[in-house]
Image (cartoon, rainbow, N blue to C red; front, side, top):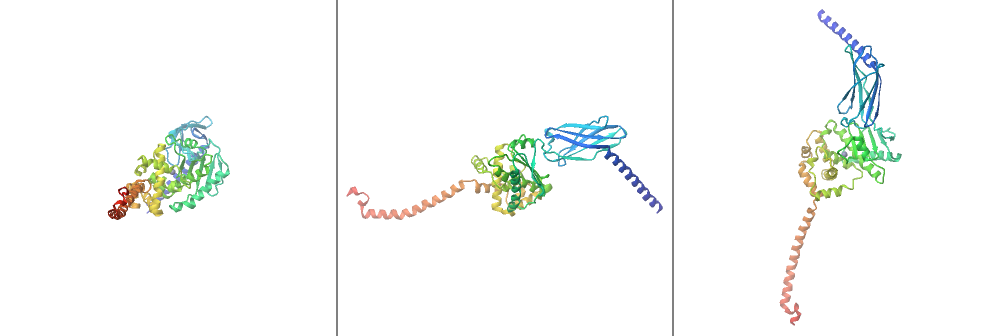
Length: 410
Ligand SMILES: [Zn+2]
């Protein structure tokens, strides 16, 4: 019993000293670095600064940068001057993929000559696109809208599009309403593409970062600006809502269904879709939907056709299977079904059959010709049936009066 008591006391004392030591070390660590700061030029470079004060000489100092949502950390060696001042400039490279308007975390670590490891507090900053001056609207409702060119009415029209979307979209499918959104409106498509560092998808005009609740759109000033707000904003919000609905299973959502639902939300559908779709059908270029499970084509023409197809296809699914059909499909993908299995589980038919049915119903005009051929056949039969007795009557009349058809014989 005594032995046991001794053990317990020894352990308690040990724990006490250990906690006391580690809290002392933490105090030293957190005060060793001070004045952490960063300045940056979007897409070009960051300059980080701090001051380090230690009793022992410093062996090495490192700076770590990390994007909390994915991306790999960058670790840099840095130096301090005689006064402990640190300044490190990092030239941003395309491969770094620092996403616009996301949070970046950074901290310093140092090792002293006596082997002590010191780490600073973790500091964060929002990597805003500071090449532009952004105007903004009050975000008391959690939805902030930022734009570069245009007046307050433009910003307000985006708010209207947000609320109209939440009012209307639940006719198709019920999705969670985001508590916060940050929407950035670029003045041109090329400005947006340069912010996203896109080189191989020149058709991209909008972008959503669903995890962060960030939406980037390019809506230039012009006569169709109001229509573009009604088209792009609801589209991108649906991507955010789908992430909220599916959480960690969001990556399992097939591209065709994600883009199809987003397209359903557009309060102004692109007038280009129908001619693109018809040309795709006429040229036998319709893309099988199983090729749109993972991603969309990168070439502009193919991407445009893919968007036109998923818009029409998802509308077809809604017409034929209703809200419950779309919800079952989303549920199947949320529970991990593959692109093709999800369709058979939720709708009881396979993706290929569904595509064939959609093509027949919306694109295949020969089906209409087939009906008229059938109608024509019935018409011929009807004419024959009517003509037969008429012919007999004429023949009989001719026999009674041979001159009736050939007066010259008179
Ligand atoms: Zn989209």
